[in-house]
Amino acid sequence: MEEKKFYLKDVIFILLGTCLYAFGLVTFNIANNLAEGGVTGITLILRALFDINPAYSTLLINIPLIIIGGKILGKHSFYYTILGTFSLSFFLWIWQLFPVEINLDNDLLIASLLAGLAGGIGSGFVYRVGGTTGGTDVIARILEKKIGISMGRSILLFDVLVLVLSLTYIDVKRMMYTLIVSFVFSRVVDSVLDGAYAAKGILIVSDRSEDIGEVIMLMLSRGVTYLDGTGGYSQVEKKIVYAVISPREIMEVKRIVHELDPRAFISVINVHEAIGEGFTYLKPQTSLLKKKKILD
Image (cartoon, rainbow, N blue to C red; front, side, top):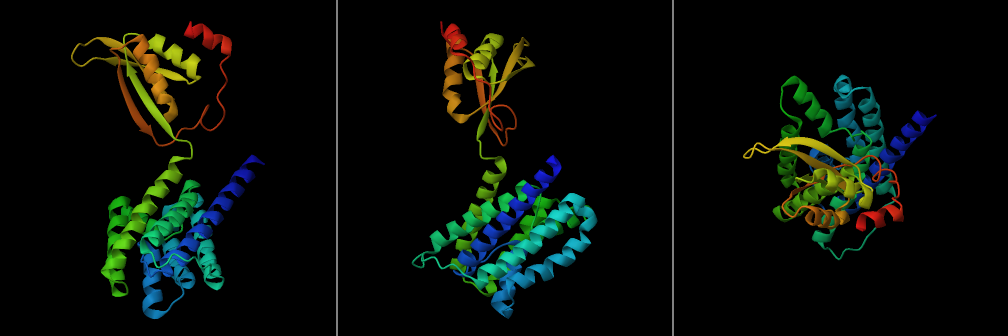
């Protein structure tokens, strides 16, 4: 029963993501004559030069790629890629059939930002559950397995090639705005994939590591881990405190460390995703009595 719910959630995210992505593509990219990278960019070129509906060209390009790359994708990604491809084509057809007009006063900057935002959130939803909309991802995986070119490099080269070809129907000005779309798109996708709950990792090197760890656990109700470390210069062994906290708790941790050991070394690092107590489910509440005891 639980597995079925998880699968249904994935399907909902893919449908919602492709719906939003298609909306942004039709309402902002196509309406303002902005290009796009990857296979989607090719569909826009075909639309501009030969008047082929992107809803149809998306299927015509992606279906052969999915068939060729079926074994490479794996069973899970294969089914989700099929769902993503067909749902994207369907929603492209729907949004062109029932367009939504948004008056931007011909402001290409706002159009670029909204295109990147809609596409980034939509694609982020799809990627977050392990799905894709076909296209560049499939090509990149095929090239990586057959030729040995890394996915990141092949995706970048393919996007650049498509953007250059897009100059056949847009001018340099709109190409520059398209680059803004691509930048916003990538940043938003990263934000969606990193998770809604931001987190920071903190490393503390101190002679009073265990005291600091105890106070963090009791005051902030955050778990800590003690790592064994040796100073490169002093060759002195020390315990290193590692904890994952929310950004708003950084100053509190610094205050705790400074009070217990003003000479402690602190390093704050970015955490792309935090899963577990206090992040994906509630952390236990420390009693006021315990907190008062620590403060005293």
